[in-house]
Image 1 (spheres, rainbow, N blue to C red):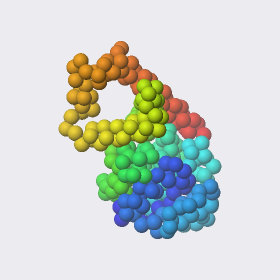
Image 2: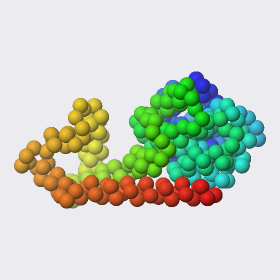
Image 3: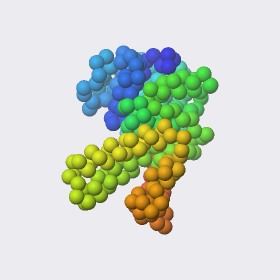
Image 4: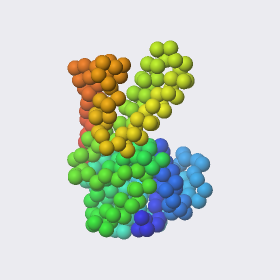
Amino acid sequence: MDRFQNILLVGCGNMAGAMLTGWLAGGIPASRFTVVDPNRDGLPEGVTLLRELPAEGRFDAVLLGVKPQGLDDVAPLLAPLLGRETVLFSILAGVEFDSLAARFPAVGALVRIMPNLAAAIGKSPIALDARGLDEIGRAAVTALMAPLGTPEWLAGEHLFDAVTALAGCGPAFVYRFIDSLAAGGTALGLDEGQSQRLALAMVEGAALLAGASEFSPGELADKVASPGGSTRAGMNMLDAGGALAEVVAEAMTASRDRNAEMAAAARKA
């Protein structure tokens, strides 16, 4: 982690903001961070906030936190600040190494990251791949990402579309399921607010138990669902014809395909 003493965040929206929160909570000094964002207010004390990119300067690490569609607006202004000593981190969905390298030819190394908003509380999966880093550099990146959750190095860049659909988009799918559970409880007669609280507490506890258990989630489901019991009756509905697995697979496929479309658009730009 000590390799990255001077970190620039270009854009600090929801995702980059969650990462900044996680880093600060993990003990990285605020003085290491500079944020460039014309719309951001209320950053933690000690973090430098700029409204536009500086005319000069060098940074150990630069995090691209803009929308993928905004890459070509920021690239000409950012490129002069990147040198061989700089590691450029990107959370831009669908923007591949070749597309980044074409816009930032002088940069020393490229790292693609796929986190999610749980980075703010140190509970995000962190999918990683790199170009131009040796083992020491990869270890430094792993250390930098560790306060945000669980770093996972992928076998290749081609897996980013799949991991985006799973780990990047997945939280939204889980939130939809929580909402559906709460709505189901309300339909059965519970107060709406109470049903929401019960659904949230249940999902939190179930996730923590799954993370700590020696059993797989599928095995845990079977342990909850006693033969002939009420849980099994509900499980039979979810399992009928592979209904739940099918709709989840279709959602993930749609997310993967959209990510691939964005990658193709970035290559053409």
